[in-house]
Length: 359
Image (cartoon, rainbow, N blue to C red):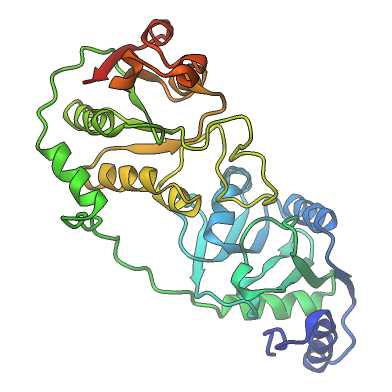
């Protein structure tokens, strides 16, 4: 049977899928059709995960990012003796050891690319959904993201479950690729190339700071010297590095309170982000800094402060185990607005970290 959802059929395409299935198994499938309801879909997902515990489960995640978000849950299911075969486009960075994973080529209509759960032991049950809408947004964000629509069915018909398993077992997946090589070095004459050259040309003195990350504020005022020094210290002392992007700091904006729904790539206040997110957020200076850190082999991440000035830097030190704060020379003679934000040496000196000013 062809399980590819009909092109441009919208929600009515589910009736064609039912017709194909009836033709295949020789009777009308005993199934309940549904249209999009994110809460019901998540409830059904959790119920099938529970009833299949210790048995067999075939599960579709749409994307590797979604599988990574469910990592802990599926480690628990595997520990309980479940045999799980998972399907997703892309390859997760961290796969549970006992998980049978099959990477699939990107597609928005094929069965193996959809959100589904199928089990034949201990219970016979299946949930299959096709995501409808803009193919460019397929698998991006969560089920409750605005604009998402799904259609599908739930069934305990043994003939339907057996047909699904037959189809899914035949999916061989994309052959594993060789691990990616090191990122290309930034080109001379580009912002990243110029920054890389400046860092490589600097011999940083020992900081004398306790073990911990380097924290450096960027994105507000002339921060070039501080950025170069922070990169040089992190490189020479093998320290993690956190770029605190202050470019959006203020009363009238917050990167954590927009209307993007549960997009898994949106910034989160409790974790660092990489160059992909920085570029997506339009923070070119932070993107450049992260690219250079990557080229230098420095473990680095960006972060948007949850408070202004000194309070935001103090939060970064606490959240990300910082011990060294590298500051621009402007902290010696801050302007009025920066003094209000606490970006003066007398206020910053109260933070629990070694301070280095890049003069």
